[in-house]
Length: 116
Image 1: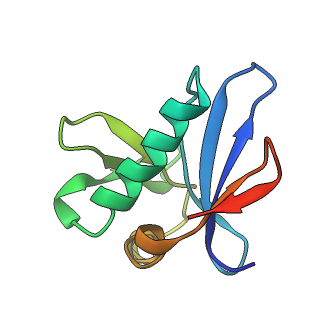
Image 2: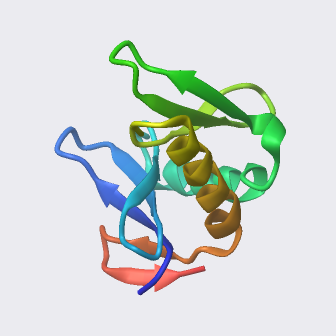
């Protein structure tokens, strides 16, 4: 399978999603959600907001690595990227989310079924 969102249950009994690119690298990850329905709402929010530059914040971590966050209209962060060693790599990560998220299928690893 190529690009996709994966929904899974963490060891803390919370639901999470991650967006994987076609190369299977995780390009965006969520916070924990108390219900699967809220997690799926988070996925839908990423799909809705991903195409628009205004929802991305480019950041630098304390260890001088680069990352970005994707926020909803209300300013709440809905996804955080992996860490990158260069600004260019971070910008490529943003481009990948913009390209892949809107039409990426969702794979529910809690039931092992795929849906869009």
